[in-house]
Structures are given as structure tokens and as C-alpha cells.
Image (tube, rainbow, N blue to C red):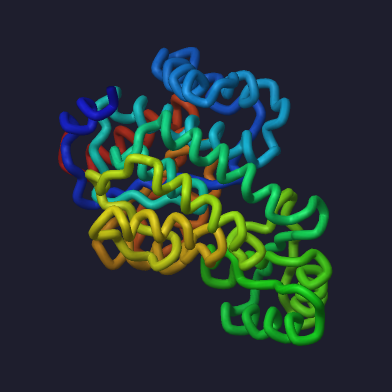
Amino acid sequence: MSAKRLEQAAQATKTAFLFPGQGSQKVGMLAELAEQFSGVQETFTEASDAIGFDLWHIAQSGEGLDQTENTQPVLLTASIALWRVWLDLGGVAPKYLAGHSLGEYSALVAAESMTLADAVKLVNLRGKLMQSAVPQGQGAMAAILGLDDAKVLELCEQANVQGRGSVEAANYNAQGQVVIAGDKTLVEAVMTVAKENGGKAIALPVSVPSHCSLMKPAAEQFAEALEQTAIELPSIPVIQNVNAGIATDTSQLRLALTAQLYQSVQWTKTMQFIQDQGIQYVAECGPGNVLANLAKRLPNIEKAFPLDTQSRMEDALNAILVAEGKIA
């Protein structure tokens, strides 16, 4: 259905789309847009039929929304619903796509690399495997603000030498913003030392420590499911989390998605790549504006737009169509 839309879309030269990951979910997301555009509900129905339970109900009621096996398919579906509305309204096909963590799957669905039905089943399994890899309460994640990357890595290494278990850099989100993940006691130890070194430390409300070596057992099982899933090369280049590069064949895609579970998200490098390619406009295709706000700070990004309400969608559409020379 969206394949035809994408073929008909005009090609952008200075716009990239970003797809958010876990943490961007909120109860009632996309409710206003669903009243205006029937495609939102249709997308959720398509995904719910594939997965066997009602994703729209979870998104609107909040029941079980923060359990990762639900969060992941709900967020992916919300992003694809917004993507389809964008194309239905005559939006351009971005020059690049990138997704933060789970958002990489949303980007791949948007780029026709995998179907929505396959992707929701895959990320539901991803959530289950992640949750079962670490006993409840044993893992943790925290954002460390105001220290450079090298300092955060140094503090993690010191904690690893002194303690039992491991703590690692999980997400390089922006200059001076690194998320760490690992065993709870070691994450808390790094938080304490980070504050002593003049940084800030914020514990993240997550049930699973993503993007660290505690996820290796999950990744091994997940690789089997990926092998069984039909994947094609994306029709729009998707910048990968693990290396801020672009896959040239489907085996590279599968390897990158497996490694993504236990390796760091290279978001700072991803956004640098986007700027190096002459991108000046970005839109965040999902609930909220976390990625748009990160992008606003970058020197070469002129505007960063969220898309999750009708007015935000219309503002982004008008500005980007003008910037791309599609309307005067």
C-alpha cells in the first residue's frame, strides 16, 4: 500500500527523516491525527492483525505500554502510521532515513526493506528476548550529561575493574550526552562518580539494559529470527546504529541489526553523517520530539520538525516542500 505512495513521492535533496526509539511512547499517542486521517487506524489494524493483539488499545489505554515487548511494536506502528500520512499528504521522499535503536526497524519498514507485518512480529520477539536476557531489577540505564565521551568510557572502565558485572556506553546521543547500561550496581557507581566529576546523571525508567553485552544471549537467539525474515535492500538509504554507515547487501543489514542489540547506538556520528551529506532539514517520524530537539542543536541543521499532531505535520510539510523547491 505504501509502496505506491513512495514511488509517487518527489525526491528530497536536503531532508532526512528520523525514527524514535523506546522512551518516546505516551498514552493517547496519535489520537488527534487518527480522527483526521483514517490511515492511522488502518495501519494499527494491519499491525495488530499480524501480531495477534490490539496495539491501538495499548497505545490509547496505556495498559502494558511500558513492557518492552509491547512498547516496541506500538512505537514502530505509530511511526509507520505517521510515515503513511506524510506520503498521503504529498510529502517528499527523504534523502536519508535513520532510526534510534528500535527506530531503525521503523526506518527499514518505511524504506520497504521489510513489511510492517514482519517487523512488528520481529520487534515483539526482540522485546521478549531482551526482557528474558536479564532478570528483572538486575540491569539499569542512565544518561550522563556534561562529560565528554572519553571521560564516560574511562569511568565505565574503572567501575568494571572494581565491580562484578559490566557497565558500558550504550547510546552516544549528542556531544555531552551518553547513556550507559549494564548491571545496576555498576551503573549506580558510575552515576555517583560522574556527579563528582561535574557531570549530571539521570536514571532512565527502563526495564532492560539495552545496547550492552548483557544482551548478547538475546542477540544470538534473535539472529535466528532475522534469518527467517524476508529483508530487501532499502529503497531509501538507512543509516545504521552500529557504524553510522549504510549497508550494501542484506547480510550486512542482518548482521547490523543483530549487533545493535549489544553494541552502542552511534547517534552522534549518524547526525554528523547526515550533516556531511548536506542535509539541512530533519523530521521526527514518531511520537514526541526527542530526536528533533537533539538535531536542533547541530550547526548545519536549519530546522527540525516533529510530526505527531496535525498542526506539526502541516508545518513540517509546508516548510519542507518550500525548502525542497516543490512549492513556491
